[in-house]
Image (tube, one colour):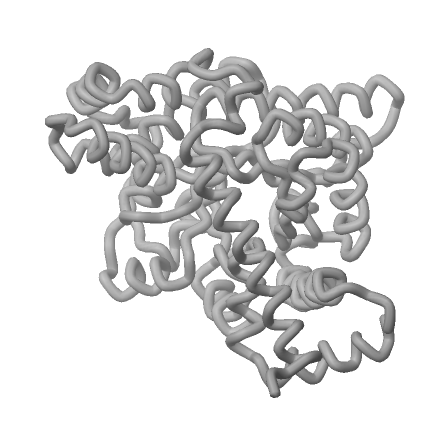
Length: 355
């Protein structure tokens, strides 16, 4: 059987589409394509604010009056909360239809808290309380893995982020499982929780391209477009073998294969809106491909020639203590931290305009 994006959900009900943006205009159109979830992070948040600056400028001035002792960051994060709540409302019908498994808006914890598991958990609980259909992003870092288990235990549905590799995904999936089992052991409900573990396929590809360029490795460049997909499919098999209840989520798109190769799996696919439009406009057929392995010759070349791929592909390729120093982790955290700073600057320019 094959289908296109508009009918993928009907043809493969376990393969669901989320929108990698909380922008209301994009999200409404994405819902028409079949999206049943969406996401926000520091980069998305500052983009949304800039895209509707008159509205948010007025609101930031109101927040300044309401919160006279708040820092620029506190006001900025209040804006993030409000735009996330707005997006979550658009997803309420899907949340009810899927009994909490989908229909969620992902809010990301502040990357400046990434060194403290306790602070990540506290913020995750706060965000989870903003709306019934909020799912909270916590990074797959050393401290993040600790926070993922504890926040799950407290009843927070988690979307693991800053995650690119098989060892990160499996460690995060097992942390979620430990949190769920702790709740169950105490007779507390896990009904309606909908945890997911993201693998940012394109960001793994990006990092390996950086490594190959720096090392002068002779490798077919097309094979580097398959690294994230190979890691995703391997992690998917391990989740099934170990009975991990969290679903995998594909994000950070760099090519359409990061959607088409995963169709048919019990997975979430979360492309940016522009990628969804491109796939819809192309009318691309989407047959089941989740069960089709990546060409072994491609995996073998990556595994033989690119040491960082081995670390990303082997389930024991990294320990949690090594997650923080993985190149894609450092690059992504720095980007999210820069977006935090940019949002602070937006607030500053509104409240203390240049003379």
